[in-house]
Image (cartoon, rainbow, N blue to C red; front, top):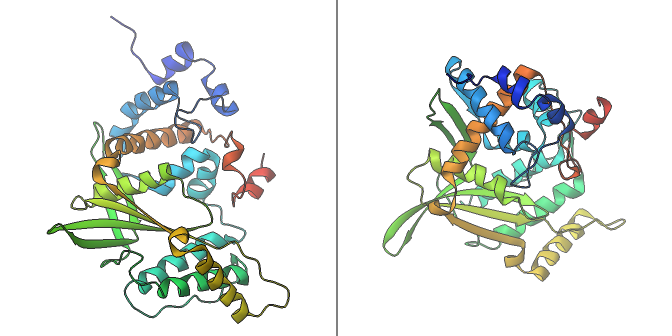
Length: 315
């Protein structure tokens, strides 16, 4: 009779230096994202999940949690396990939220405004004015962004596993119903307000979650709104700065400032995303049990990270 494969047996016989390798970050990455994508670790997590899932109920996961853990488990620990508050909330959280609300109202012909920056947010007045200018420009270009009918739709969906359910959850920015070739089609829309192109792999985590949660949706759409790279000139008034923002957007052309990408259900690797969510839950569970929360091994995940100061203080 063969030896029973247990987590302890793997630690002692198959991979005795496993802990050392994980702490040192010596893992390979097939997808060029994250640090836990090598097959031995995934096999370890599958085995661990076999023993652990049956003891748990309703394990929850979201696209943002998945991407955070895969980019840096230590950052995941800071955000979701230790729940250490930000010294000051990153400006892009607030700016992105305001952009979402404003755009949803603009496409519906409703009134909107960008409020004053709260004192606990790390953003500048120039950034707020750039957002104001971008939204004013979008308002003058009706029909360029798909309009919707049910903003901020909550999605929570159960992924049935061999053991116990994993719950995927998220928020949809917009849902659009359109007619094409005599047929009605439903599109889930996600808005991204960014300076650079968004990571499509991370985007697919979100799209996959939404399409699993909204089975009647045929497509997923990404609206990427690019901020103009502008700095206020010395002694430039708010009004003059807004005019220059508008001129910059006009000069570049709307099509280059707002990109709309659409993906059919068949283009989103839904089954792979289900498996990835199960793997991430298993890896997080493993890190909890072993109290191992490695830092990102690639500098790609660190520049601009709002947790970098805390991370460096506690190395």
